[in-house]
Length: 139
Image (cartoon, rainbow, N blue to C red; front, side, top):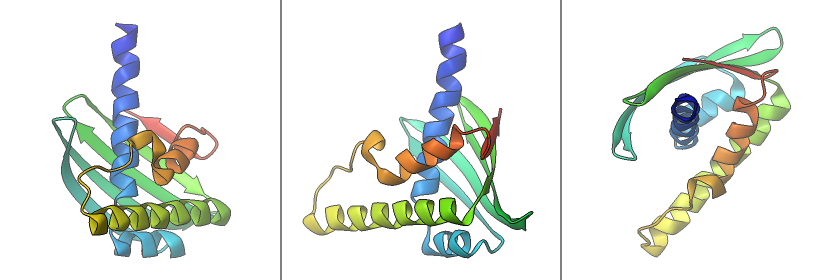
């Protein structure tokens, strides 16, 4: 039972990272400038429907507020983070690198994408999502 309890939050965090790392130019621009913005998404991952909402909350105490709600058949999570300008720059850089990589794969006509653990945006987001001084995750 303990393994199942651990697997559900990890799966939801992977979904959160993947959802956030594949965002629109509008989301990336709003995140980069910490301008309030909300985006809702629906996709399928590992055969499960994933719905998410991502929200840039704007400046809060000198930090950029961010909130995400992820729902799957395996569970749900609410993630709230407060990022410094340096963290935002790192995250935006990783999202832009990821977008460039996806475009290169599409230009080459390849059917595969990099593994989730190799995706630079997922690696950077995971670093902050697991840092309790930056983000809090609740189910």
